[in-house]
Length: 326
Ligand SMILES: [Zn+2]
Image (cartoon, rainbow, N blue to C red; front, side):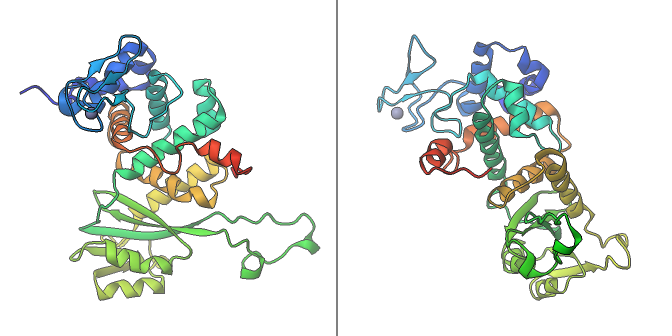
């Protein structure tokens, strides 16, 4: 039996240097072999599954003999209605994967010499594809949980007499949110966004598989988790790790997300906090595989993902509404 493409040496050819040397034809062949890996890279209709479409002469399009649907290698995927050449998508993915603390849309637009808007939406589509990889996953085994607050920053006023106590609720913006992460030791990282840390307790109870051990800090709202799961607590005012009891892996995730916020994006606004959290979780989960394998994983996830409800036609919608916030 032929070796599956996703396990082959072709994986290595998706590092940035290799993609930069590719022609458009080679990039198309790479996309085809990933999109249609179940059919050894040969196209089949995304609507009816017919494996014998007519190729068009002038463009890389196919017409289904069964249902007459005309499709390209990106039809029905998150890259549907794409504007850039295929090689640019492979380049964007390789560049995006290389940014261990994320990659800003402005920088991506300079890298690809495309409009900021295009880079912004493309980066968010990649985040969506990354997030899809753990949708429905239920953490099991040893699971560390922790929360981190993001957004709603209030700049101190210039003059001392104008300054307010920023810890008081009445002086806050209401935009502050908490990212709570469930991280399996040696497994996956699942973040979610809540109004407050204690609001995440029902989700954690419902998501972490019964029989798992939950590791958490000393915050009182985690006490409720003990009703359903074995819990081990670590009191950070005494010690950060007592050997077995620690949430160091959960904190590694927050370290990466915080560095992405401060060092790359400078500001992560509320509506996108879940997307950036998912991206950083994906980077934690895949930190030990090569650049080429990371690019392959993101390309394959993008080509498996359906057109995005949030990001398809995003700019047209936000322009026609007369607003865009970011
Ligand atoms: Zn068809």
